[in-house]
Length: 295
Length: 158
Image 1: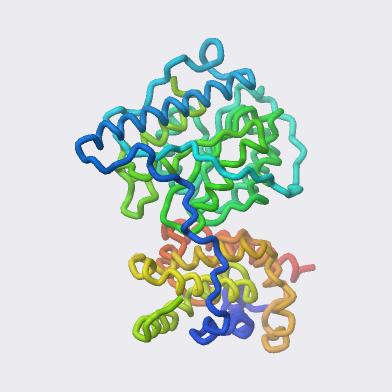
Image 2: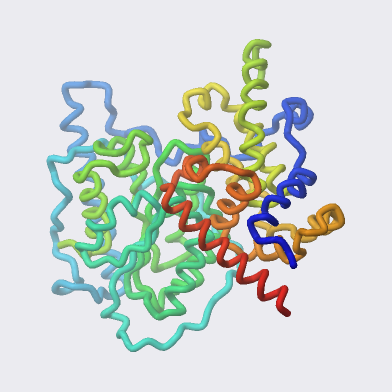
């Protein structure tokens, strides 16, 4: 009779230790301490073109910067929806000429989010699934928001806009690949999918290609990827990959969360998560505005 | 990167303190081969960013994520089941199905169940490492144990 699982796991420790010797300082010396990771100096954000050196004008500049970003964001949303023939709520293209911005008293500083990057193309051949039949018409399916603990913090606020929120803590790209695959298999994907990942680890071009393989433009007309924010070594590289997605996928648009989050009041002390109710509402408002759900 | 002897000494002490649990965490996630390699990468990164790392509140968790990033850089590989076979003779009570069953768990479930039941970590320590709630850790651990038991029982019954 084999030992119980817990007892076996205890015995496993010796096996693991036998195959993974301690790493010493001398070991590191012998490897010349080569940096094998992305250098952190590759910031995705250009220096603030507005400038921030004159305190007397700082507030005005912040408001102008925020207004400019929101105008561009809304403009992109309208253009995107015009391009693909909007099917969402509202007259005409589905979005009014003016879209209410998030709480204007909730002022933030932002850099210019529309930074240009070298365009790259995913080089992968991801797995594609067969879509199951569903009785729910495509246009009636709820928008889906997929993310990590940042999004999880604003789950109730997003749900109030009608989003089905699939967010969990410590989420990695692999989880999202599996989740999107499952959602498609279950026939739950609608016209709009929002994805906010990359805070907890690297998201490679292969990962993004695998996600997009199950979000084809003829099934999901609007996929929004949000850039990520946080003092972590993979954030800049993840953002660089995210912002190039529209060049490869016509149904993808980018929400520049990084630029908006940098000086967002109401974040937790880790500088990543949303702490205050205002910050959570701001996050939800942004996503709802970007996707044309908030009018 | 040039450093003074004092800084080098401080870093060596840091490695002695952080390395065992960092290695255990990355081995629990990626297996002994990739896990150890990721530990080397994470500590190398720590050396290069030593000034910054001293201000990090939870350097172990931070470096764990650096290690995760490193593994993804050299390619996401399945848990190397074969590497354990040589040790089977040394652990006759160890089911040959255990490691394949672990490999079939989700990454998070595997990490949690190995850290808690193989390495003896507390649930709170795992929660701190993964930056998730202790209740989430408990949930993953229970699911992992159930799946392992189901799979091992099924295999043993065949």
